[in-house]
Image (cartoon, rainbow over all chains, first blue to last red; front, top):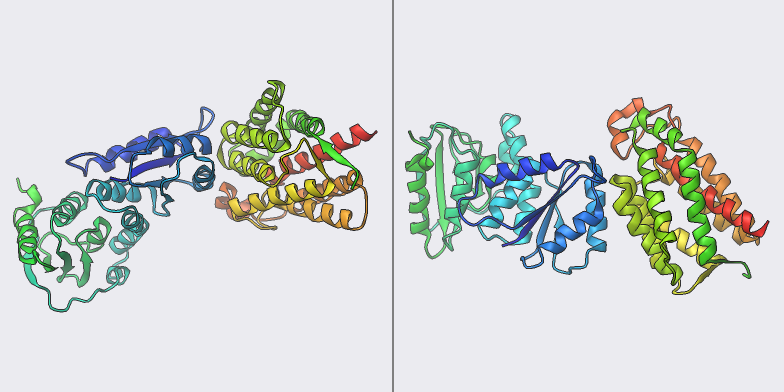
Length: 239
Length: 215
């Protein structure tokens, strides 16, 4: 599991962002450190960031997530002055969204590169939800040819495909070797990979939207069925 | 070049820098209150005082070790972008200094160049962005030009300090394009950039400490 370092001008901000993100994780939590504040006030401290990264030495790489301007600057210096040598990347994703994507991705066992890409795309999901109709363009189309299995279901949980169900979907998708893709056929968004929280959120799928599930791979039909069950059960959100 | 800067001379520069920062702290903070979070003076006083404490604690060894210790101390005590940028300046100087107890003129020029380039690379700022680069870049250009013209190190550093001051003042009408001041947009114009002001103090302190030694 990769490690996560949150770099913020404010410790309270970082703690809250991490607490929020950890709501999405139901199993083992990813290892994380918070490097926030400088000299007892707001700010960022490259030496504190460097020791936070070094602290996570046993993990499969570290994603550093930053808030405002100097957080990036201090983090890039931290990468130079740290004593550990395993891979560490600075995410360019927005703070809260990237933290959520990283926590969910890390808990699902994704690689550092995949999680970094996921966190980086986090702004797209937000744009898809705030600019009407532009959502379809933010996710690149993949080849939907000859899915080994597919199904279509209607979303029945009141909140639609929001972050918690998306995280659950990613977790479920991670249990299969098949590539699973979802499309919001009602709104014409997608397809997106079911292994990406941010991708799933960019579907902006609300209650009663039709979701198409496509899977490609050896266990495709079992995978489609598992996802279908989640949708049918309203992701456990039906009262 | 026969002139050389010894460890002692470098320490004198840093003492002078700390002293000048302290006497001009209120002004730096005033500049920062116009376009930032009003803490640049306080932060730099804290950082340079920590450097002095470190030096007084008895760091000997090579120029490289001295500059590295200064860089790390500034990073962990100044805080924020200034800490990382001043830290980078000294760490890059250290990395590009000989493992020796003194710097000759061309070695100093080389190390200062590396320090300024490090700050540019770290902050992605260029001249005109209303940052410390507006003072540092003209200073290093003037230093190189003066040395290339065959002037002595002392006179060349003085030329660098003069260029830094002009560069500092050039930030007044500029609209900030980097750092937190950039969020202010047009409202950042009309004020000298506090980072450029402290950077000019750094170069002036070098000129003053060299002047004192040879005087």
